[in-house]
Image 1 (cartoon, rainbow, N blue to C red):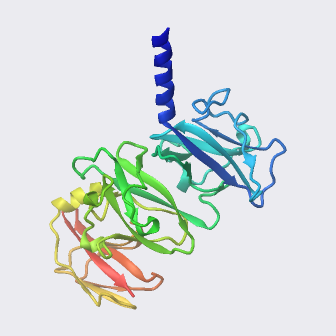
Image 2 (cartoon, helix red, strand yellow):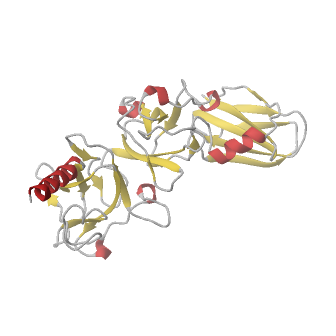
Image 3 (cartoon, rainbow, N blue to C red):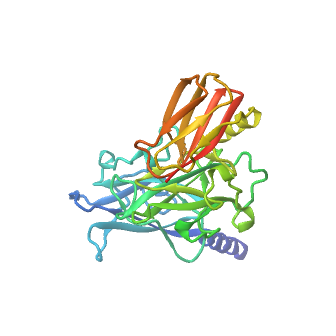
Length: 334
């Protein structure tokens, strides 16, 4: 009997050791609250002790806060080192669940739930802020979703992939990424709307030794640089590369021609000069990895690129004469 009791105590202690307090909160400013109250529905409800199973819309009520009566919240105890999915519900029926914007969704296999990765056992409460109902971020913040492909990073550190950036004090341990689809590591952070740009680097591990080396062509002071005019999902990049791993592989096999670009930097226009008049496709890509302008079937020895509606900042001009003839040039607009 004593042995059975001891085993039960040890199991209880183990369960407590892996428990973590997590606060879920939603901002309902300007919205009418259902007479049945606010709830949260997710895949954590059973393990958190709520009856009826997971994804029940009426078993996990949110309490109205007193400091700000627009905020409804709950604190639950759930195991750490796990990913959880959820939605807020204005009422107690499935059809009253919020519509989660694309930027915040899991996004794979048509999964439209919010998600959070609980990565810490520290004696505090994990809390990302009161997210606005059916929106991406808490009031006064923009969502930033980071994505990195680690397949070319070599041996992955057991502590996982992290990010350090100016938006979180270059802390190497506080921001861990999570893989939703086996190859891409992701993280959602919330940036004050007063911050319009920031720098960061991915980390293989959780120390400065694991910082990636960002190629000079896409680096600013050795870091990745981005602008945040709105809720933003960054394109996937390969660890220590400027683009995704698929295009990195193509670039490694490619024969790069000489391309001359002047003036650079510019505040008006620049001229691209080529070695010959082969037919080329030219793309201008911003620091988020999005194509902002393209030119097809160019068969001259030069091309004038006007600034026009492009904003100040760093761009990349990708010139493709064929699958095996590609060049990338940094272009700066002042």
